[in-house]
Length: 110
Image 1 (spheres, rainbow, N blue to C red):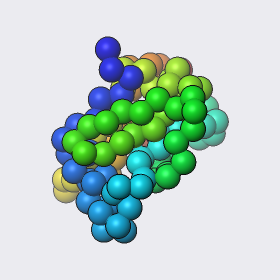
Image 2: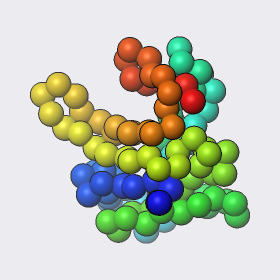
Image 3: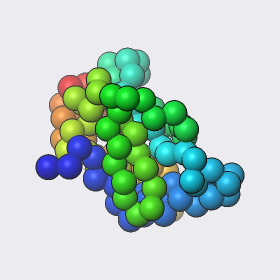
Image 4: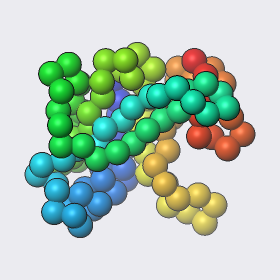
């Protein structure tokens, strides 16, 4: 089982954003789980150029995704997708480890 699966749609969006800022070769997307939100934990996505020694790196569709060991515990088996429809637009994380989610979908409990 992959730590995180990155869909083609998500990889294309990441690639486009990094390419627009001329950072495709030097940066990746960091996926992190931090405390907060109404359900206890929330996702944090940010571009990062600092790969740490203990990070796991997922390569998909020409982009890199970095996950630290603590976040990996909560993200194992997750799927990172990018949705662009009339009802929603943005990155979406489908996490089989989330036992509860808040109404707005920005935080979860495990």
